[in-house]
Image 1 (cartoon, rainbow, N blue to C red):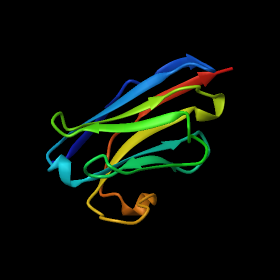
Image 2: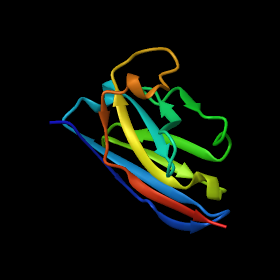
Image 3: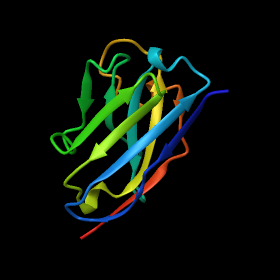
Image 4: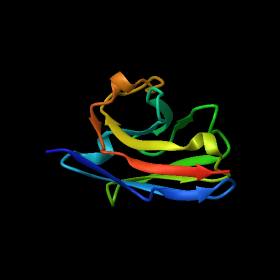
Length: 125
């Protein structure tokens, strides 16, 4: 049974930082592209970033480029999201996701096979 468990969410003032973690089990982690998505109240879930199997390539949404950094530790079956210079518009539930899709942008929700339960991030102004 595949499980993705996010942690590290919380409340922070604008300009602050948070680091999210997602621990994976029940899958061969090093064979999966990992992504982060977020969903603000009343809005659709949107792509934030993703990282390839080896961590060699990353892709970011324009809204977070230069502020967020995704990384992974395949020995620990964990993917991370370092969020700096947070803005109120970054508020939402953050989800990690796993996909066996190889190649391409891999930024569509439909391309991801497994999802975590989400962790809340609240940024106040």
